[in-house]
Image (cartoon, rainbow, N blue to C red; front, side, top):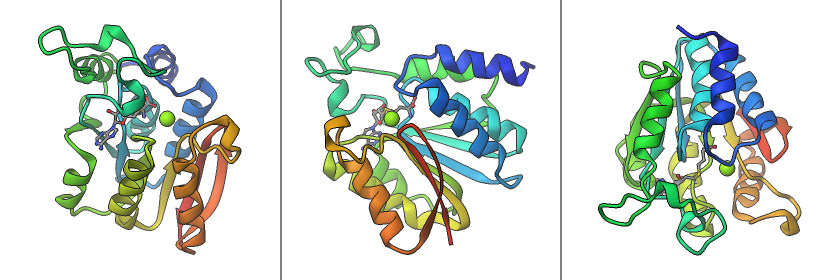
Length: 207
Ligand code: SAH
Ligand code: MG
């Protein structure tokens, strides 16, 4: 059994795109949740955010579903900014983050807490009936993909539940707009109130 600090230190070393201050904020938001809840993240990559959130889920007796098809987003493919040759499967030449994700969750001792869902977000959402006490959207950032995640998953957030969105950049010069657009849509729907932010992370609560 690892201590909280050991798990968080491990999370900081996992490959990924989550700055430490934002990962720590994920952990803090998670620790503020009610006990026994069902949580889900869209976008798992190598498991970095899953360990920050999973460490909190473990403390709150919650379960975190960590969803990804594990073949990377458009921006992770060869020739794009966030490509990583080490994550290519030599057997078929495709990106495959699943083995790394599995090793991450196992080394963090979180296999009973963080449950992988491997497949396309939209298909899983269409067959996922549980309501969510916490939803973290950090999947693909292409306009169509981000909006599909928003429409498929946010209706499942329970009243009083928490919605977190990553890579929210109000200034278009800082990054892609779709995560910002869905964050605005959540606020403008009147269904969510803003509760806090850290870097490009925002969290909201369902009314
Ligand atoms: N939350 C992670 C980073 C996720 S990166 C962290 O902070 O550590 C975004 C991920 O979304 C990629 O791994 C990509 O494979 C996944 N993704 C993109 N579109 C998807 C889709 N339609 N269905 C499932 N996963 C998707
Ligand atoms: Mg992100």
